[in-house]
Length: 299
Image (tube, rainbow, N blue to C red):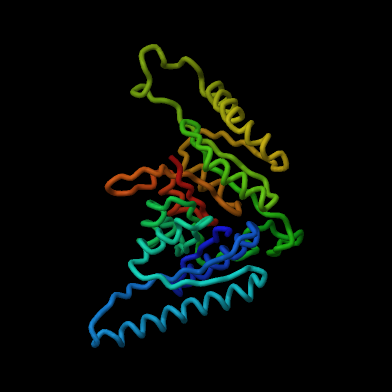
């Protein structure tokens, strides 16, 4: 049995946008879509039954609303739903273990504050063992595509670039492969971005200062990136790859590159600390990128 694409829904506008995006992704991957709604039901005494009944009614309504939207927008998807008990973060993490990937919503804010990600999404992204995609409120199918010749939104044009943020100090196969797969599914160009910063006098060892100048250093990183990607270019010969090496902060480079992307892919170290973390670059992407964001755990 094929593992499904799973979308967590709670009735919010962002979760409905995420569910619709997940339906399109399920069709691209030829996978079923499962909608999951988590509710905090616990066995209680008789006087608690009205509250439990109200929760069950709300859960059914949330799932029905999402189903109706998906069947209208993506009629070809194979759709099922599931109500799961427990705190939302724990329930979604458990569901994700059986998923191809998990899709959740993020609430978009204007201005410098970027994306406001709820505690559930943050907890899931930090702990999930499967890729998690965050989708902002208002995301539409047309947003994944280039505009038509007259500048109007369209789903008949090609897909915008998939952008991969790569760390050449820890270039992980799981993250790179996910990005190439997503680009191949869309027949889109894959733009791979690496940002480097000149070493400071503190970080250099004796005799290292000024061994190479910045242009030479950039050229070396470009060669390193090309070498890392060569095996993947050979594995995905039909995917056009654009290599981008820039000087500066990785978070800034990725936010800029993702402004015209259909999807941004970043990695997260699947460590198990006492307080799960996403890392500074992934954290910045989660909070400031407007396009759908895939966070891929890796060892």
